[in-house]
Length: 241
Ligand SMILES: [Zn+2]
Image (cartoon, rainbow, N blue to C red; front, top):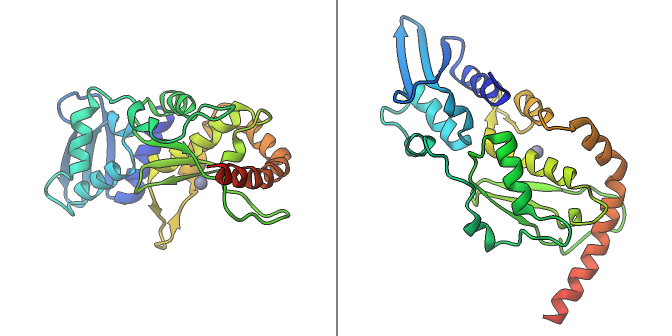
């Protein structure tokens, strides 16, 4: 089992409880089969579901739990397209600003998607706008975000600098795509677990994880400084329009 498959099985176990046993199959026709034996539930699912995104897995879980008797739309859609995974839609990406001065987000997104997610994720990505208000000193910065409603990954424009290694931008994109992949997870006490153990394990699957984290620690100040400059230059750009 690869990392994605392990994460997928973990997710199912966590959400279906101890009464469920999960087997991944290579079956090309039968994506899901359920056998109930007393309190036990034997579930066999296609390993291709390991590439599904959060909403698809949510749908699968509620179907397996018997909450719905009809296969949810997201699951059907996924099964229909699983045999021929759709490449990242470049067209819809074009409307958003993906090409930076130093880093091309469309290119980076393609690479991260194919290297870590089997090319199965479909999403939009764009450079975010420079924030209108920035504190003069210190503070924190959101380097990336994933908007699940818009299916959009936003990357902070302060990362579009020659001094920011491309590998670091890849890491931030990878982090956000891991959010997309796992969806919102609810912990045992009903709390939202944004960066739970499964998330952290997948994040550490990033090549050069230690190196990029170290770089982040050592350079966050310079990114914060760059952000403050960004604010004034974007103000100029607005005035000239
Ligand atoms: Zn996060």
